[in-house]
Length: 322
Ligand SMILES: NC(=O)c1ccc[n+]([C@@H]2O[C@H](COP(=O)([O-])OP(=O)(O)OC[C@H]3O[C@@H](n4cnc5c(N)ncnc54)[C@H](O)[C@@H]3O)[C@@H](O)[C@H]2O)c1
Picture 1 (cartoon, rainbow, N blue to C red):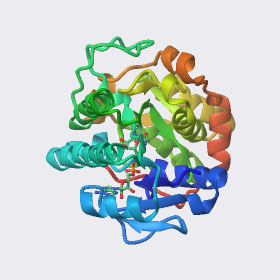
Picture 2: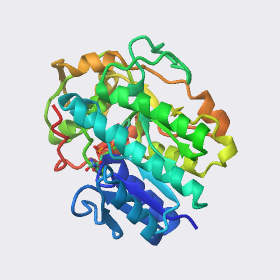
Picture 3: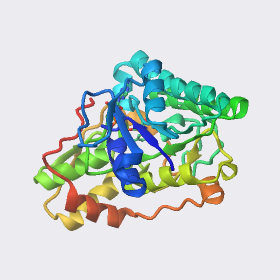
Picture 4: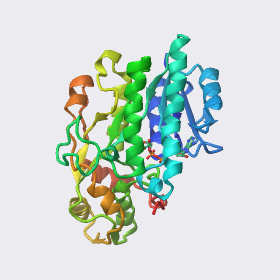
């Protein structure tokens, strides 16, 4: 039986991952961890962990006989630009601490399987922007993207050198309604629903034609769990897999909302985030994920917009990242 630790469980993705894993594995097999003193989502098996504290990490993994770790603690693209060195330290040393722990445990016959997400931010302005292949030029421009690219190299290194079973996905922008986004460039695609539900006009910080790869949370969670469940020999990419959900721009998203909320209106007030978005792909080629472990996205734009409008909670404000 697997015993699973999710670090970053108070965050946008971690909170829903704990829920999904608990439903699948039983709540006693899943441990939620974050740097905060308590679970913001009422997760029963909660541990306070600073992922930079290697000793504490080791203790929790030992105490609960953990067999899988999802390491989601990170600073994202927008918050990272505000504090680049802090972002680098957290994103890289957090990953290294887990990889090192797994390396040591391999030697003592107690292997640890690791999930660590990369991002489309690992790509850059010279990456082919449309149908971006799995293997492409990567010249990220943000400290966040640089940390993700370095993390991909570290993951592949720990796999090939030490046999650490680490798996990763380059998440597109993740859209969800249960918890606020964590300060990324794609947050507009969540904030826009809050404005529509509040009956407010939305001032978008990206231009109308800025197409970006996105994924709806249920697909993102399913992709992560399916990759972790795949037989090791099927996981042939040990840097990070491209995984496509859907691609759209603010104009298309606003139109889809307006078809359902006729009074909804959008205006455009571009800021520095435009430059970040312009350096990222518009759509991803996920042939490798499909061939290796059977990935296929389920949720399209129409279903996403219906579901977001039905469920988004106007009390949950978007992250004040800027
Ligand atoms: N959300 C997206 O659209 C998106 C897209 C691409 C990649 N990702 C990646 O997915 C992962 C999770 O993203 P998210 O959106 O849920 O982020 P988030 O900011 O919502 O959550 C991150 C969590 O990490 C916790 N944390 C911060 N420092 C910590 C530390 N030292 N020790 C332990 N916990 C700490 C925070 O308290 C927070 O709860 C990140 O690695 C991120 O880079 C997210």
